[in-house]
Length: 230
Image (cartoon, rainbow, N blue to C red):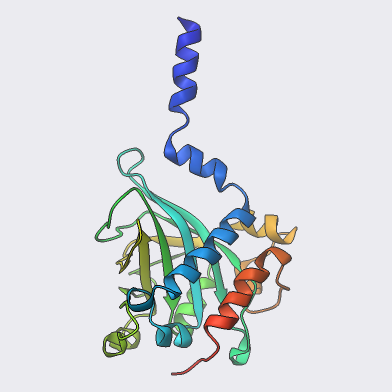
């Protein structure tokens, strides 16, 4: 009986969230996944993030494999990275670790896992990223971002929101509302990537050299967002 119970407990510990935590335990794995997510969303033709909005963005936040676990923990949770344009718009900073927790994610578009991308559209939103903690919809205004290459008419949202949010689940791209979600630095990811304790402000303002593991993301950002217009 004890042996059977031990086997049952071992199997129940292998929930999808437990498996995800093991798979994504390394910062470099999440960094590679973040690069793929943003690349896919930018290449989605008439269903992806509008190029003109990407060109306008001051920073980008990418959270791959964000979990919706209300049926277990009553919470949402994800770990990803943020990068900002260097002063003058020449290139992008090294990535800084980000955690997103809780909040209402609006309309769920299927499954218990989705990728999220947030475009930071102005300097005020950028300053929030340098803080130790901030809440979307509270400290920073956020709106569901328009999708599609012909979404220029909808970009009035950039005049009213500091951040625009997008999601992908099971191949479906959409804008999402992230009101109430809390974002804070992922200190353990930063220490793993850089080999020392660094705060997000130092990383995102370009004071830190990009590590080899992040060169793919930096190159992709430089290639797909060459211009910065207002």
